[in-house]
Amino acid sequence: MTPFSSTATVPRSGKNQEDGLFLTLARAVTILAECDGLRSLSLPYPKEAQLALDRAIVHCLDNGWTPPKSLPELLSWCTQHRMGDTRFGLSPAPVTQDARWIDPVGLVPTRTSLELAPVGRPGRTEQDAIDSLAALEHKCRSIDGYSRCRQFLAHHPLITQEDRFDRRWRTTTWNKVRDLYEHVPEALVDHKKLVLCGSCGLPTRTRRDERESGPDTWCEGEDCPPGVPFRLLRNPAQCLILRRSLRAFLVTPARTEQDAMDEVGRLGLGHHLLVDSGLGTHHITGSQTRDCLVQVHDRHQPARLAGRISEEFSRATHPVLVVVPRRLADREGYRVAFETALSRECREQVTLTTPDDLERHLYPRNPPSDSDREDTHA
Ligand SMILES: [Zn+2]
Image 1 (cartoon, rainbow, N blue to C red):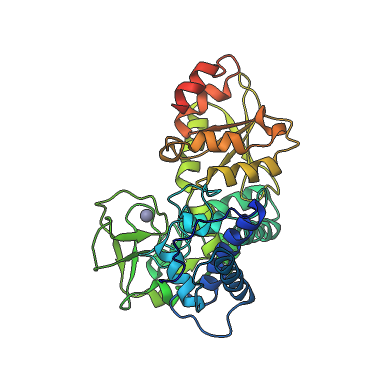
Image 2 (cartoon, helix red, strand yellow; image 1 turned 30 degrees about the horizontal axis):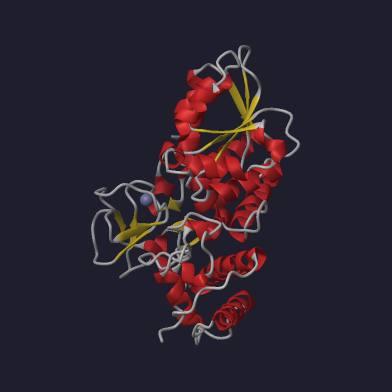
């Protein structure tokens, strides 16, 4: 019998227990990737990884399956299977059915794994991004200065030697953000080269040295279109890369945030970043509009995003617009999953939207009608 395989009927264990194992696995793969990449597992394992292995073994034995013999075997299973796999007793999974723990080409935790956390709480990687930004804000001492630094980070996931000799280079900003960059991890370097996605600018990995994005390539953005040529850096030792947490939670939504703020500007409205607002909340003001709070996200798991939003805005006195890229909002079930998972207190106050749809939510005279909303869900 192959590991984890069984012809036995899967008994339904308690939901909390399923959720627990599910999250334990996501946490373990995230922590292992932080340690030294998933390719170079060595003993002793981090305690979270050992815990994941122990729980997976118990889960398998309870269900009459052959348990994994080792952590590499468990990780190999997590790489090959989707989270909605019924053999793990997780169907219907609390995330989208096609999500994975580990990307089979990238061999790193997926964005879903980074987003997963107990409902309503930030995961470990997201918390690291929040803490890093809070420390930067504290260092900047003014919201304008912090806003400039945050903008710099969002648009510079990677710094090359050439960047630093560019005449537009801002040394004052760099001195404030420098400690949020690190040397390029070996796990991202292939044959002494670093390959970057031509769309999102984040690291990529390929199966057969492909030169452009396609079905057998992976980039950290995970959503980029095919057929876009990669950018090749032949001397990654001379580059610095932004921390993984900020690449995932600040760089990934940066383009959508820019589009949203451009739209706010086009409408002649004012906006400013709120002090101490975690990953970033904008306050939108204008004489004809209602005051709104805007947060921009790029998350693969709408229900988990709703959990975070519910926690953060349970006492909001202004309407809250949660802006996501159009490609996500249009995904089947995305809006419904988000709205269903919102807390009761937030349902009236929070709206999921996209940059190109902001106008109708900002003007109180044209509130979206129920039929509009249903059309959008269809
Ligand atoms: Zn990409």
